[in-house]
Length: 212
Image 1 (cartoon, rainbow, N blue to C red):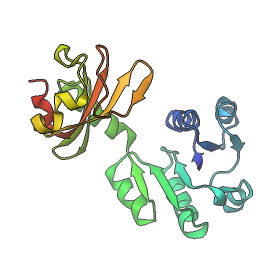
Image 2 (image 1 turned 180 degrees about the vertical axis):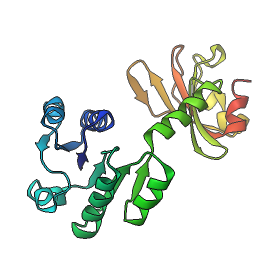
Image 3 (image 1 turned 30 degrees about the vertical axis):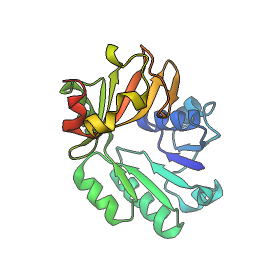
């Protein structure tokens, strides 16, 4: 997979680094040479250029990208123009755009953005979820449905997933086990260890029963 990140502020820089760490080929683009210098050793390719010039975008091979992320943030007009160029003129399959408000999101979707993200709003919601929850970590997939993490209770230690019967008892599924630096996809015969972190998916009321 090939990703292009346009705009290398704090959000764009971190996204480019994280994607590279996940094994993705990343092309990083910004008009600011200093920002490009910060990322050039962490990505496949880093380019200084006029980010909203169609011919320059073609010259760096933007049409070969599977996904382009517009992470400009501050200059909304540039985000709109870029979205239009990438979707309508260059035919990029997937364009994801960073936005700072719901109004901007609506406009970006109208000009063709496949996905619009509001990092600050989403981070605040995530923080609120975690602060108001008894779980180590919780993500709301949809209203009433969550994925949540817990430290292994003493009564789970040295038992298998099958023995604990999570679905029969709570109507929830153990979807992952974090063991030291390894993430394990649980099978019915896997034995739970003392310091495992367990991830469960299900209706929030059912997952909450696990720790009540």
